[in-house]
Every structure is written in C-alpha cells, then in structure tokens.
View (cartoon, one colour):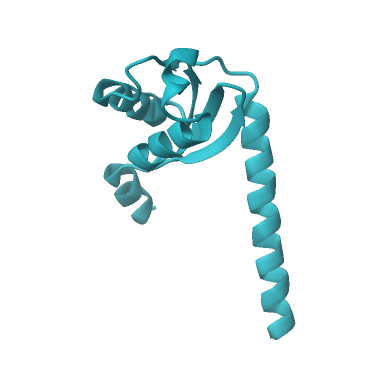
Length: 115
C-alpha cells in the first residue's frame, strides 16, 4: 500500500511538470496584450488582466523601462500574480506571462450532476 502511494504521488508530480512545460511553450507564441508604464500597476490594468485571464487562461504582460525605476520585473510580476490570484509561468526580459485556469460555472457543474 505504501508503494502504491509513492507511485501515485510521483505521477501527480510528473503531470504537473508536463502541464507547466506545455504552458510555458504556449506562452512563447502569444503577444503581450497588457503594458505597464511609468505609473506602475494601476487598478484599471488589474481589471483588464483579470478580464483577459477569464477569457483565455494566460496573459503576457510587458513592462516598459520607465516602470522599472522603483521595482524589478520579478517584484512587479509577483504583485500582479498576487492581485489576480494567478501563477507566474515565465519571466523573460521585461515581459512575464501569468496563468490562471478557467473556473467552471455553477450551471455547468449542476448539469453534469444529473448525467
């Protein structure tokens, strides 16, 4: 029984690694749709990022040089990820990609319940 548990945990970790790597690969081909300027992260930008995360699962954000006077790219990415409740997939130069899986609606869950 102990051996089965170890193999199950191992396959879960392998699946997570595969999912992360495929998410990284997919983020290479999307363009940056949000840009953070010298004002830094604003409330309207967070709303826009949340909107885009709900439509598609990942968003690429580009930080302009003027925004990097107060904070680094990693700090900005962590702040955006924390405020949008998403995960950082990749940071490359002045651009980072965040990922948030789509949530199933309540109607969809109840419909499956009776099938």
